Image 1 (tube, rainbow, N blue to C red):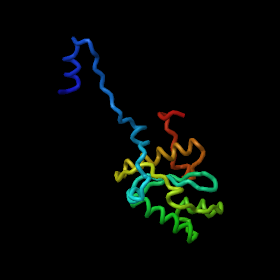
Image 2: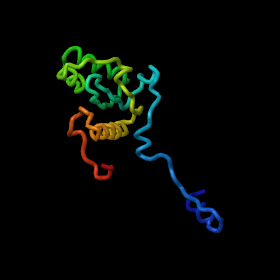
Image 3: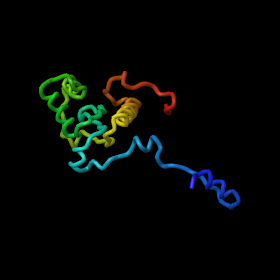
Image 4: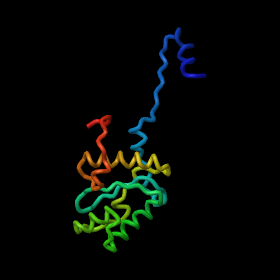
Length: 148
């Protein structure tokens, strides 16, 4: 039965029918995956790295496993390679790098590229509002529809 026909057939009843969904954009983007296990590190999606020395944050996305991406950041740090914005911040500020379970937070598990782009931008925006992100400032564009 279609929603409108259900609504029309209930006009004479003492109840009102309302259609809602729990799948809001904020809820979908803010889903917290179960990342307490090492098996979660074998997934891909959106992650956040927190610097232990200054509490600044780096938000990234990966189509490879979270573990592989962390190892790439670690390798760039170890060999003084400026490919990684995260490693560059560590080196420029003489920070120490922490263990994967201490500094990496899995924000969203997904394989869909457009979902990754949107979700990553959302989390970069959140950290930008908090003043704690080191991602490129140009990667965050003001959105007139989001609450300021």
